[in-house]
Length: 259
Image (tube, rainbow, N blue to C red; front, side):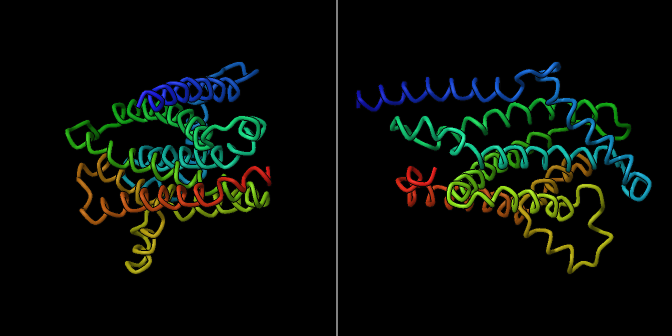
């Protein structure tokens, strides 16, 4: 028992140092530093509004919030999973010399992404306060559910991608193409109800869309999503984590020979 406590303390110290290092590296030699965590989503929102506002701005009520909601969640997913994909390769010099849990590198990257996501959410909520017709209510507490599910889902996807990236370096280029396609499949800037009902159901195959839809239900419609959507969000999260853990456990020792 004493050995487990000592080992946990050592890993905690290492984990904290990895988080600090990843955070410093991200904003190294930048003038605005953490300001980019706020400026990035705002610039992306401005571009999307300028491009798609003319087509969908009148069709969608509270279009700015609708757009911001989709963009902030998708940006977090993209940052967490893309950063997690390179987490093992970027730290190969460490775990090939020292026997430490490899998942710590992935988790440290995810913590940095969660911090940026939290900062962006603050700006998102400020936009809600300034939007006429929208107001906070007790339903907003339910947003913790999709946020928690999305964090778990990103960790699971990051584990899968980081393992694949060790064996197949082409996965990074393929994933970037996939993300471009996923933007359109997540209904970030257009309404799903403009499509036939049978096509609308297909969107629930996309986990990112499920989390975005959950957010919009609370923020824009003041309604709690159905029990089925709750199960989908939770199921996607646990499926990704379980698959990621299986891959890590199965190929843990082989990582050393390919990095």
